[in-house]
Image (cartoon, rainbow over all chains, first blue to last red; front, side, top):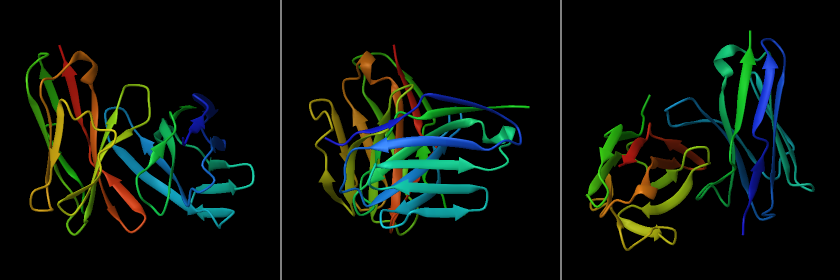
Length: 110
Length: 111
């Protein structure tokens, strides 16, 4: 079945760039997403990329997709303390139900 | 900005009791999802609606869980009887095109 994997934890200093990585197994995935979850809250859609794209940039966020290796990454430029949260990678077919990874906890140190 | 509404935000119940959660999706969104998120894990789909019809409930434990969306707008998820293992965050989401928007969730604690 489908599987999405992420590293558990990332720590960076304020002002540095953060790179969160994700791998997935389902080659028929058409959309890949990044969500942010703060403590006790729901999930906030950050960005998504269609599988025929290699890169998408949105302000401080850059998504890179290597479809051959089934590898997705999220780069956050100039990371701020407010970026501290859990980040989830998810995949879907045609934007339908989402299959999530286990989440990466990002800690930003002042 | 339109948001997905959920209530209650928190619920504590004793095992074997019944519990219900409510979700109001963003206006005009025909597709609605219920996900369950166990602490420390990513959300997992329980049920998907298209308007008032169930599209996918393959992961819904039907012996104790039920979901409905009678008029194709708001939705209710029920658990009866609740078990200790049901303690989790229950998230509702609605979809527009390729974007899914989540509500704040209901944190359920079963004692």
